[in-house]
Image (cartoon, rainbow, N blue to C red; front, side):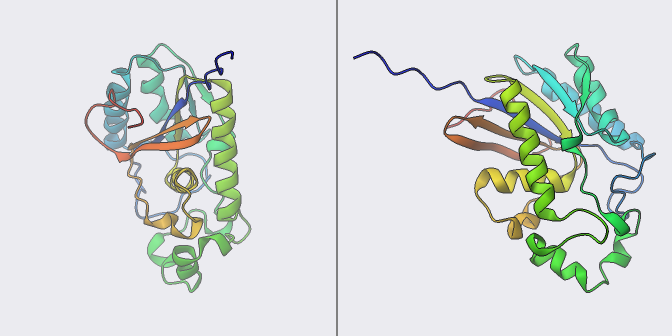
Length: 215
């Protein structure tokens, strides 16, 4: 009997949250333009770039079009001699009327409890639902995986989309995705193969990435 063809090699996707900004942890900036990395965020981006530069290969660097994501992706791409490709699928959630509001005020709203405990049933007023956000980021990662079979791809995005992608990869319900922590400039690695995604690391902020592989 002829040998069975080997399944295609998995694509390794490194999901990087953008670096720290002047409003991180205090304001919900959403998709509003004009928010840049703080000095601390620029240092975080350089550190993430140095970690990723140790890998044997990186085939492409994609990033959300927002400035803070583009500025995080720039040193990562430069270290590999690549250009940053903008991808709207990696955008922050559309927070609608909540965009630009302070978190301490939003936390007092009755809807905040739904955001934390039943996100699958919540839509931001005038914006996106969490379910739509998850479908968008998962679709974007599938597109990137298909474009780079067996390769290594960096995707710079935002906390909530990355959390939603991790939940999907782990088969975890969206209502539990708030239990996942994604820090600024952390690196989350997911291998997308024929047998489904395998989560290799989540919220990694230090150490070597060279040993990332399914066990």
